[in-house]
Image (cartoon, rainbow, N blue to C red; front, side, top):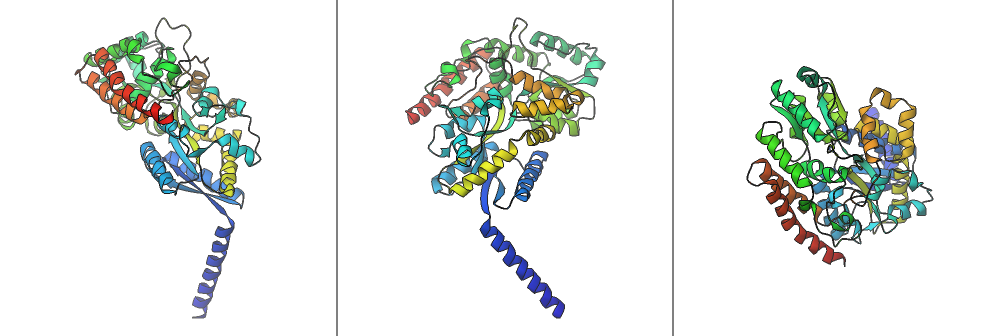
Length: 435
């Protein structure tokens, strides 16, 4: 009985202490799209724990909200209900929705108000451009990636491919050798609207939409149906007919599984795929830059993927101070280098990139530097970003029409025209909401 009473007394004292601590600590709620069951979610949880343990003023409270679409939808609903989190992880297609809304506080303002001096010019330019608006830094870049061409090096050796393909013509020649060597699916791609369409237009310096892809204003129109993208789409349809390319679904899991089990020998996929590939590929693999057209002597930067961290309006200053402290923690070169190693995402600052080089990381993993080099190519008005309203819905249309091409229901030109015909009314409707 006495031991039991002592135990209850200690437990009560600890409960009282923890309650007092909780009252003294400002909670900063962070909604995200990284499942706690996968490596990215575990790494993020580790960062939150490390930050929380490093000081006593703030507590980062992570909440997994599902997919990227689930997270932005939950955030919008919470804002309307007055129950918004402090931080929301928002992926590229949904970024304009928040930038043009009255629901967010610019990150540079919050960082300055909290007393942090951030050298924004030391961030990688295409990464920053996605989240800039009217001279303000609207969000903190976080998980940033760009597509690469991953390949099964053992399969290349078996097929007698001596040089890694650099052009689309080279890739077709390699795909035919892989087919002859017994590979049912020489080439596949994940995230088709991002890789097959958007990144093709960027690297080839082709307009995706008018007004610099919407970066110069929301009243833009899709224009890619009048560019050489249509020829590229026609080429891939031809590859499908010849058994050189297989469609493995809209996201990443199908393509990854086909790559892991060696059905597909080449996968056009995010640089962030490194984490999964390194854990699951039971063969020698590597990566290279995205292919270019044979006549493209000055390929442009590729388009980033991933998400940024937005701060919601309507919260108390201590909450913003806590968010600023956490962002400062995440943006340090040491943390960005750790993130780069553990996630496969690129570091968001030049300082972190230089630290990785100094540590010899790219000597051991040279393909991890490729994404950064690809992003740091000289940009043009066609490649500084995409800022178009209702892009989540437009992407759905693009995916539907791409599937019509893969299934031979439409020609490349018919599908591209229908993407534009169906998508432009959405862009027009969005533009009217921000006038």
